[in-house]
Image 1: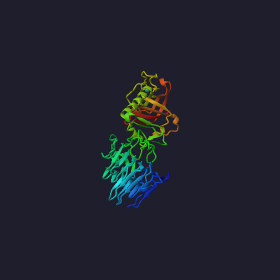
Image 2: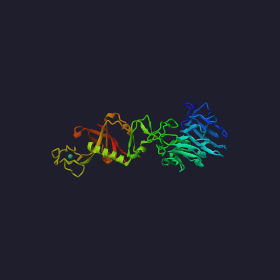
Image 3: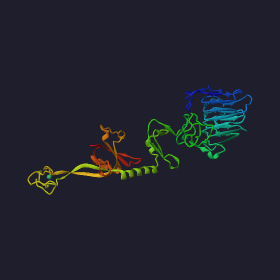
Image 4: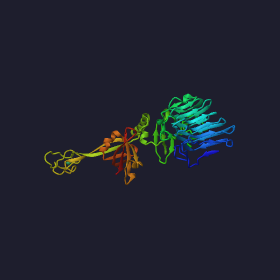
Amino acid sequence: MTITSPVGERHDGKAGTGFTITATGGSNVIAFDIGTTHPSTVVSFLELSNCAGQVQYQNRASAISGATQLIDSCILHDHTNTAAGFGILFQSADRNKTARNCIIYGITPSSGAGFGITAIQAAGGTIENCTVRDCETGINVAVGLTQSIKNSAVFDNGTANFALAGTLTGNNNATDDSSDPGSTTSNKLSLTATDQFTDVSGGDFTLKSTSVLIDAGATLAAVPVDIIGTVRPQGLGYDVGAFEFIINVISENISLFISSNFPNNFAALFLTGCAPTPVVAPETLLSRVSDNTIQIFQDGIDTLINQLGKSVRLIYPPTIIDCPNCVNDPIGNKPANRFRPGPMRFSDGIRCPYCRGTKKTEEENSEVIQGLIQIKPRDYKRYGISVQDPGALVRVKTFITDVIKIERATHAIIDIQKQDIIKIKCRKIREPIPTGLRDSRYAITFWERV
Ligand SMILES: [Zn+2]
């Protein structure tokens, strides 16, 4: 027999998001008191609140060999009235009892005991991937009983995380003190709750991306999913508690993220829509790139610019100089009208044809730098550039040390083939834009063919 809420009306792992049974306090009990006709029972996807006793596993009828009882993916919370209470009660020896992927909190009666999960009267049960917080006592095991607990987070409980008159075995649990009595103590984790969960006081027990509970659990074949159906494990191993942290989600946007936030100096590129979760701005992500990774990145681009880059002859505004073709007579503003050895011979007394009698000519200035050339770049809109003819655009990537030169230039003559075979003349349409990881090392300038 299964007692559950229908798909579409189930909680999302937080209280108040799905089908809920709320008692009126006092001594009200919600008890699944199963008789001999229902040897195997599952209670799942329910939220129960404000009951004296919340879910009881009881069998007051005669024993049934091999019967099982499972409470799975339930949220049990906020028992604060005067009667003693509990989240889950394991009772009767003849049942194989399990609590799995459950969240229990706020079992704090104003008088009497308040247990997150308690085992009394007979053999205890099995607790797998549960989260138990803010109860008067987290886990209680009565004298003479043995209870197993695995992959569970038990923390912030008032009197004690564990009250053990009997025996508790288990492994890979997490507490906020040193009270985990699990037999495999080497896997015991200590934690500060607020650093591990999204919003403890708000009842959101999803894991933060930095939580030590991620991948800290043991593989449990009986727990293939978490409280909301996320397949376990995600990443390197099972997580501790009711939620499995989702490392990646597919987004509709195609993006490139680089992250070095992996063990053993591995870096990873997230390509084509596979973005880290929770969503991180690319800038934030890039700030996590290691110095080594940046060095490799920069060395590669430096090599490209130095070895495969093309010559870019920057054309500066011309300088006005004295005419090299006629005598520069410093007296008055009159033309000198006298030849001096220069490019265009003329007879004294007539106007110098080179400077048309102005005595001044322009001297071309230019300088060659190296740059990576992209004809018809596709990414110009990203830089806020709008042009009538994108086909005439040329994008040049240079070292940032060339920026002062580029800013002086109005035009450029750019090699677009090796060995000076094809050159194009371009007009600068946008001043250089610094680019590169962390400290800007390069600059991108947009030009237009003329
Ligand atoms: Zn002249």
